[in-house]
Image (cartoon, rainbow, N blue to C red):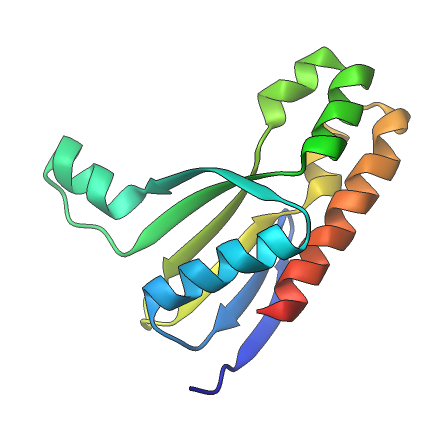
Length: 137
């Protein structure tokens, strides 16, 4: 099946519309993140959680907690409170039109809240890795 993607930016995320079945796109996203050096530490199925905990229906929506151990180590060596911002979240969801969207937090925006110039190179590296992952989707 051919994959068609559209990349666009929102103020704090980078988003990509990916043609394909939802579960296939989740798998492709995990593979792309791993190829870019991220591990997926957690996979939260928001739809299932809302159904179980709230008895509410919700669109397909998965939150993937992505972490590059080397970058995380560098960041935590610089600022121990940085762990409150980790892992970086990547979400895969169906929008109102039924399209599948992959969205990743912008590492520069995320780490800007720490107001620590020593973290800029880490956010640049993480951003480059997310770009790599998105390009391969």
